[in-house]
Length: 273
Image (cartoon, rainbow, N blue to C red; front, side):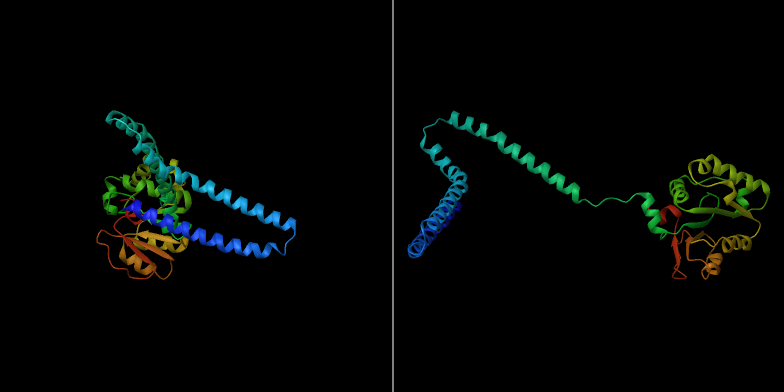
């Protein structure tokens, strides 16, 4: 069915070519009467070049069309046929493999590039360069200052994000503590986690106070681009003064202001969960 359609198309093209040849010949015969020998030679050379190019482009397809006919007229046994099929198979397989490799290259080229954690941090922080963050419930496993009297444990899942923030931002950590021993436990836990060595954080940027209002006063004085906290009252009171805030809460409360965002954890906000 496909071969008959190709043959009909080929015959139509030949008839159209013959028609054009007659018309062009009649045209040239009229023009040649008014041309000198140099112009006639130029036109003849152009015609020869066109015919040669057409035959050159036509020859591969003609050879492919005639090849099955030669194979059909040549006597051959079933063994020779299978041998011919086997011989022709590797070229087809190689062509398929090359097409597959080329497609893989194209797919890899147009595959969207996954952003790095550093790029995500900068994007999420809206290019903010100064960040203040509460320790309890965000960086530490403990959820209240009273628990720090017994122990202080850095959350392992937040370390990667925290260290990336210290590379890009001026980070201050702060917490309300009940006694001096709690301060020592917090500093020791941060040091053991490698925050002071791997990141850009120093101990002088870990601030302690004895009241919640003291922590809010720290934030007001530092004037950060972002403040991260778990206390909804502090978030609400600072909304007028701080450009952006992140409220960490397991319940994911509704946004209280346009510049206040919420997440269940710091790493969840940056898409690391």
